[in-house]
Image 1 (cartoon, one colour):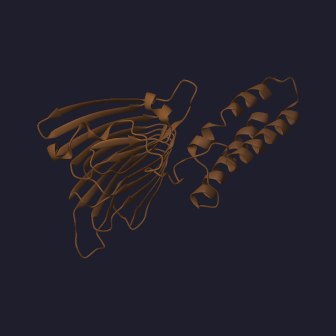
Image 2 (cartoon, one colour):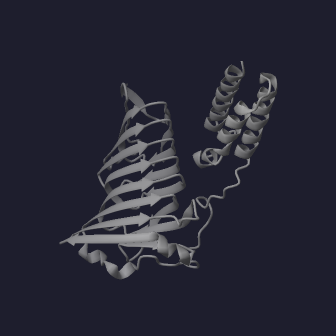
Length: 297
C-alpha cells in the first residue's frame, strides 16, 4: 500500500508544482530541484525501516513537505539577474588585444561552460574578452585559438574547482563586427545569452538541467539555431522584424510559442509584424523533459 500512496502523492505534487510554475505563481529552477537529491536517500531509508506502512507514509509526507518548503525558498543564490558593474569589477581572464577585430571577418566560438554561470554581452575593441569580479576564476579558464586569413576559431572551456559545484559568474564580451558561428554547451546553471547585438549566422546550444534566457537579433539576414535540451527551462526571444520557423522534435516537453501558427505537426511559423522584413530565423528543437517558451519582442 505504501508504494502506491507514495508514488501517487509524488506525481500529484510534481504535476501541481509544474502547473504553478508554468502560470508564474511560483518560481524555481532545475538547479533547485537537483539540490533536493538527498531526499532520495531519505526515502530509501524510510523504506528499509521495520515500521508499519502507516508510519512510513507519515514520514514520506513529512519529507515531501520539507522538500516543497526548500523548493519554495531556494538557498542557492543566482547571479543571473544581479547587476554586475563590469567597469568597476573588471578582471580580464582573456586579454582583449590578442586578436584585432579589423583582421577578422568570421569568428567561431566553441564555449563549454560546464557548471558555471555565464552572461553574454556586447564588448568593445576586443574580439573576445571574459570578465569576472573574482580573480580566482582565471584558473578555471582554458583558451585556444586558430586563425586562417580572416576567419578565427576560438575554443573556451570553463571548469569549476574541485570544491566548487558552481563557478562564476563570468561575463563573456563579444565584438559585434564579425559574422559569428557559436557552439555553446552549458550545465546545471542559469545563463543569460543576449545575442541581439551580434551577426549570428549559426548557433548550436546544448543545455543540461539549466535555466536559460536566449535573445536573438535581426542583424544577420539568416539565423539558424539548434537547441538540444535535457531537463531545461528556456525562454527564447526573437525579433518581430524577422520571420521565424520552429521545428520541434521532443519528448515530454511543455512548449509555448506565442504568436506562432502550427503549419503541420512539429512545424510552427510566425511572420514578421514589422513593416520591414529583415530576414528569417530557423529554430530546431530537440529536447527531453523540458519547458520552452518562444516569444517575439
